[in-house]
Length: 242
Image 1 (cartoon, helix red, strand yellow):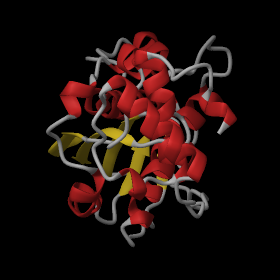
Image 2 (spheres, rainbow, N blue to C red):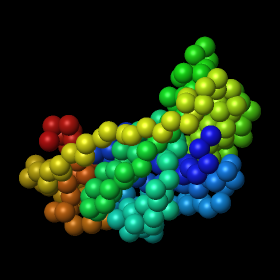
Image 3 (tube, rainbow, N blue to C red):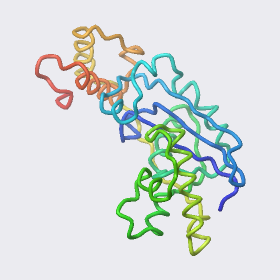
């Protein structure tokens, strides 16, 4: 087993690193199998949270209202990680979001990763599921609050311990890999989005968390979708038509 790891998990507004935002970061620095430092922070995504994400995570818009943005904390997040190997379950997902957030703030994430999902797929071929929740049950691990960043980060490391104990070859669990993800260039909010989002905010008396003219195209689309999901549309026009 690798003796210096940062277990990491993120909760986000959706599944697209380029279009969605981080809403929670959970990390644990683990040295020689012991947790020596932790980081757990809710993040204000500055866009409207969908009811679906609240249903999955239990995190509400109100929970995020007074929290820092990713721009406020990215330096301390990267400082916490340092040059350690990052461990997570389906870690490319979390790494990609982290890389996008870092790139927006002119930072880089050069770390290699250990993916417990990939290891589980190699070692537990006949297991009916490789999801983190299933593996916690399979190995008798207390998952804490599933779909919350810190607890899922710890769960991923505990799964790593269990997988390490049954791995026939050291290379299967002690071989960090690089993650390839290209950050897409962002486009500004379109005139049609600007008109529609302005109308939605006026109709529903919504105050945006930053100047509407500073929104990117993807942020505007996500905010419109969130408003439509939570409070309904403006006439019959759909966000997908913009």
